[in-house]
View 1 (spheres, rainbow, N blue to C red):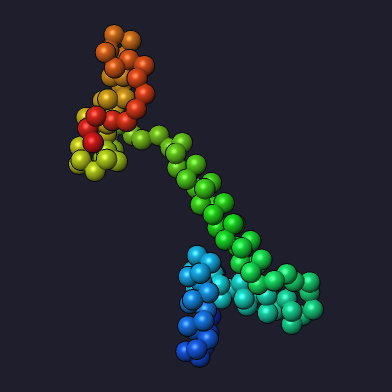
View 2: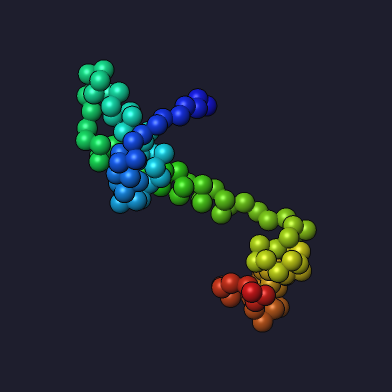
Length: 119
């Protein structure tokens, strides 16, 4: 990945920070989109408005975040891994034991949906 440093006047930097807060993106993302827009105009390529470009960038970031969340939801937890609730116990002795108990046909918890009992 290429790294470069840009220097801006204080006034321009403040305006960029306010704009980035208003649209909900980081300052770096706004600078990258603005630089891309500038280069498109400079080279004569077709370009939309800066707001549309930033909105598209923001939707791309949100879409990738949603797919990452979905991918992480399908990950199986090892029974010997630390429990994700933060209790410090192993998963099989904490939240995992509740999951096993409610899946056993003779258990009073059989078939119930809901969270864990340890947290």
